View 1 (spheres, one colour):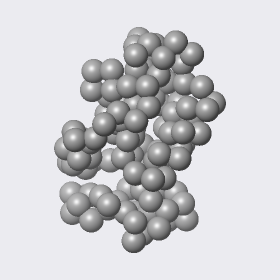
View 2 (cartoon, one colour):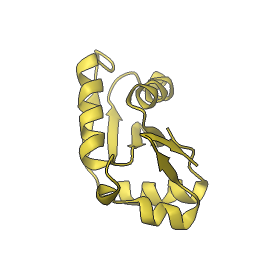
View 3 (cartoon, one colour):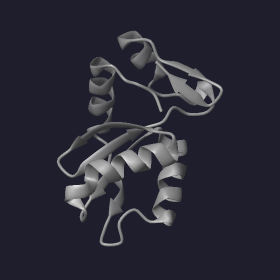
View 4 (tube, one colour):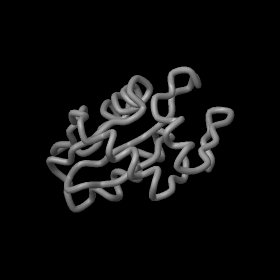
Length: 115
């Protein structure tokens, strides 16, 4: 998980606007299968949106848990949609790194992210 500056969060929010919600949390909460799905999607897309159709009052806690379990960063929760970011493992595959670095220092090392 990395710490993002407010400018970096804004950049990721802007990039997430055009994205479709890829995961929906329903009555079963965040299941183990959904956790695996979120992990896989973050690996493919770096930036994803998760919609809370249920558990709306617990969305902050559940989002923080998802971020922790997937080693991703919770960018922001807007309404009932959480935005998550995890840089690609391969530097050549990182779509947002250049723009984020221009907004502030973003260092990725040994699979862990630090600002």
